[in-house]
Amino acid sequence: MVKRIKTGIPGLDKVMEGGLVDNSVNLLSGGTGTGKSIFSLQFLFNGAKQFNEKGLYISLEEPEESLKADVEKLGMDFKKVSKNVKFMYMPPYGITNFLDPLREQIEKFKPDRIVIDSLTALVMPLEDDFERKKEIVNIIKLLKRLKCTSILVSEIPSNENIDSDSVGGFSRFGIEEFLCDSLIILHYAGIGGESDRAIRIIKMRQTNHVRGPIPMSIGKSGISVLKTKY
Image (tube, rainbow, N blue to C red):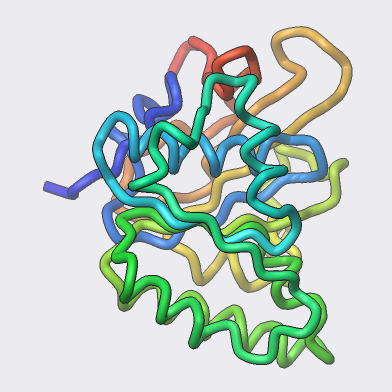
């Protein structure tokens, strides 16, 4: 039996055999406004509130108070789970060694769940693609050695076709999707209606998951995966 880590996101765990694989590294990709940060925060909040699991959110784009304010209106009051969820804000420019503080925080706090938001912002300031890809490899190797389940957020063009199966087209630097244990895409068409937002699990190791795009919504309680014929 494969141990699962439930996301607690309504409807999502059902389409991937009960949740993410325990101790896996999962890539969450999508364009601007697709709901990547909401998804990630919901993953940590649900872990703390529903399953009493510790979560670490490493943000390279927004400070802690801004992130909390964005989702408080969606029912995620992080003050209520403050003992179990820790935020780290690390502006990407000026970081010379990300792995050491990451390892230090994990060993000290011992989180069950980790989010890095975003991998794109973290490695973009590096000098060239070789250095960026090397850092990505090192981050994923570190996370896989540690006893936690992690989400790496990646920014991709908003017009990426969710029905596409293009190799290397679902991550910013083209290697993350091969190194991670799963790849989840969020899509926002901006046209309104039930098919306006969708989620697709491109791959998930050790999992018989739904293959095609699944409608989702962002409502007053955050993200929900809508009922369909899966």
